[in-house]
Length: 318
Ligand code: PSU
Ligand code: MN
Image 1 (cartoon, protein in one colour):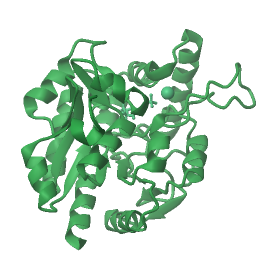
Image 2 (cartoon, rainbow, N blue to C red):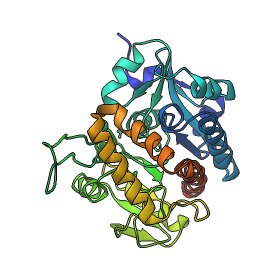
Image 3 (cartoon, protein in one colour):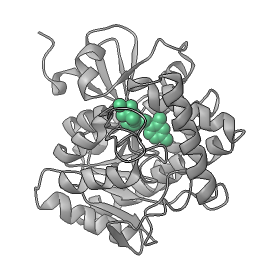
């Protein structure tokens, strides 16, 4: 037998020491490195995210899987190896593919769901990503649908329902059916909170065009609400949404239009399953001539910085 998740963890000494002393730690995911961004932007953003967490006063722990072990905290050589691994060799590991990832050799990158599982097992409470996965367009059919429902709903949403963790992002990815994603999160007991604005942030755009279920004026208020949510022991996670930095944001209507165009093309091309999200992100990068990648990298680093600030505030009141 290979043991439980906790048995498979290898926690970097710096991270283990911080956790043991109650100092702030922020988990970072690795699928955005292997599947979400092109090289070299992927390794640059991984390094910059770690630096942003440190500038906030917390310790970063990028999580990935290598040769059957869940690494909680990657050193620079490991980040580079993951970012440069030949296309197709890195498995995208989510809750349903964790057992496969842990029983094969080589690299697997962890999505939001798999990163939450590993981070929670390691005792980490705060996690930063770019945009959470959710309900894909066409997942539920509906008016105007050209085919039967695909039921493509990210395992990120189920994980948020059952793993108590603070997830900092720039909103659900704009490629998704955002209203349906919010409805699922509400049903499953996951608070979704916008920071500094009433609108739900729209991933590479400042606004999704939808009002957020809840909003708070600043990061400190977000941290306090998130701490209260975890304290109550409800079992679910909480999503803190921080808008992409204004200087690189795509205009709201552009972000929505390209997402719709790319989703239509993916449908025609028959792309589905775990390959869909990476395909859409790459297609949108091409359509926007790299502008979406600039926004995506900036928002990831910004989320890491804010997650660090939240982790610091949590550690201070413990
Ligand atoms: N945020 C980004 N880029 C990404 C992701 C998040 O800026 O590539 C990844 C996360 O790992 C998330 C995954 O869990 O996309 C969602 O994939 P899917 O829709 O197949 O569940
Ligand atoms: Mn899916």
